[in-house]
Length: 144
Image (cartoon, rainbow, N blue to C red; front, side, top):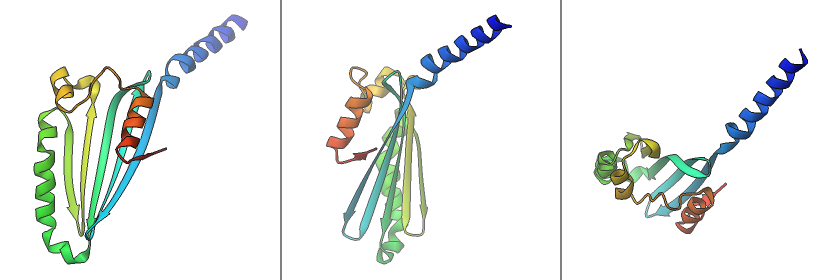
């Protein structure tokens, strides 16, 4: 009986030390206001063993009511702007409602080819938590 408890405890300890503790998520946001528009961007980057493995970026562009009639054009511009991401192995959705257009882009780096990663500027040489956080903060994001 004691050996079962000991083996069970060791197995749980191993799982905790090697499995769950190796995944970390970085959340960074940025808000920009200009000429009747507000853009809020949130980046969620997941790391496995201190290496970026996937990300999701959500960008909400909200305009004043005076620009409401142009929402279809804003959505079209965003679809065109992000179309190249689809070609590079990422999931892209663009939605609009009332005075807001939302773009969501996500990717799993493990599922992308090296060419696709290179095309978006993802280099495997330095994609650690600290490096990605510093890069996002240098770009004007605030990270938690």
